[in-house]
Amino acid sequence: MTKDYDLIVIGAGAVGENVADRAAQGGLSVALVEAELVGGECSYWACMPSKALLRAGEVVRAARAVGGAKEAVTGDVDAAAVLARRNSFTSDWNDSGQVDWVKGAGIDLVRGHAVLTGVKQLTVTAADGSTTELRATHAVAISTGSVALLPDIPGLAEAAPWTSREATSSQTVPPRLAIVGGGVVAVEMATAYATLGSSVTLVARSGLLANLEPFAGELVADALKELGVYLRLGDSPERVERGDDGVVRTTLSDAGTIESEEILVATGRLPRTGDLGLETVGLTPDEWLDVDDTMLVLGSDGAPLEGEWLYATGDVNHRALLTHQGKYQARAAGDVIVARAKGEPVDDAAWGRHVATADHRAVPQVTFTDPAVASIGLTAEAAEKAGLTTTVVDYEIGSVAGAAVHTDGYTGTARIVVDDDRQVIVGATFVGPDVQELLHSATVAVVGEVPLKRLWHAVPSYPTISEVWLRLLEGYGRKSA
Image (tube, rainbow, N blue to C red; front, side, top):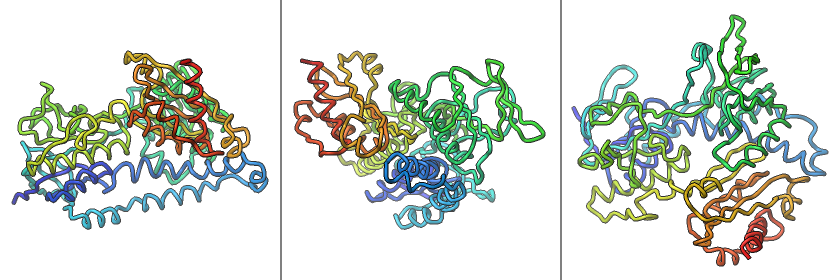
């Protein structure tokens, strides 16, 4: 028998759940298909467990940075307790709570691996080999996410390397950990495991956090060194071998060798599209899925597939590989699928209800190192490449009274990038303790395109770290005078 639904969502991670929920709230019948754990990468191997690993160390260091509190800190973090707390956030990798939520939302959960067999048709194969045929009367949404990229380094695959999954779920702390990569996963896990007691060596071909403002990577590098992380920047592995003694020996391009109990590879992501049957509908397996702003999948001709029935949300469309951005796309997609199914008006103009306009130039992101890095929109370099006439304003956050009270010797930098022609902020970056709490104000300013003359009237409370906004605006006034 074939089961019919208005919408079938492949992938029950945070993104797929949101697509399904919005459509169900709109009155559509929805099936959610998942081959692993309901809740996906974010719940079990990414956002939540990684931040749980980082939090205890952040709290201890924050206490040590405040006179009167540092005297009360008499020990280091308890690694076993940190791992146990992390386990609690993943429910010990049991998804029964998430399954209950799906059922309560009126969504049918189908366990197994889904493969497209034609337009709006799927076969789902369960773990026991049984199959279920599904048919969508209106739409299919692919929310299968991405997987870690393993670079083609001789011996690496055979050395049983960690990816982000193993790093966030390990039940032990390796005495020595080698990390390959300089992006968010690499620097966050370097911070976490150095705090938990590992001797960490990080190898990166270029600087850290290369896609952000240069000062972000520089400040994070300084902090990692202070934690005892050995940085090998401008270097790269040439060969990896795990010996019979279990030790991983990584030979570097400068002929040096790193020995470690584990090696974490954090060098990028690949789309999880290789075994979905995309070829049956004219698409290429193992490639990212291009979409328009309503998340409709585009064919090789740049137009939606005939019938406008296939959507892709989250990592798999390669627009912004961040959970919150994927959920934003999911809300737009779920709502537009309902509108199209019911023949209702579609609001697909820029910043409309049914589009993910923010993906292009207004993506917020936090890197939970210590200090944290919070950014939104364009870097100074990206704005210049986009042809904008800009003014860049920097300010040392530690000079703000609220920062001085917050942390003794507060070190951090704030930057705004202003489009001079329109007099609006197009990018902002903050680096420092707890700057993630400044990010949403910057996001509102960028997304809302708030004119600087109006933003001037958004008075920051005193004494808070938010007073840096006043100093940034004053700095722009001096530069543009």
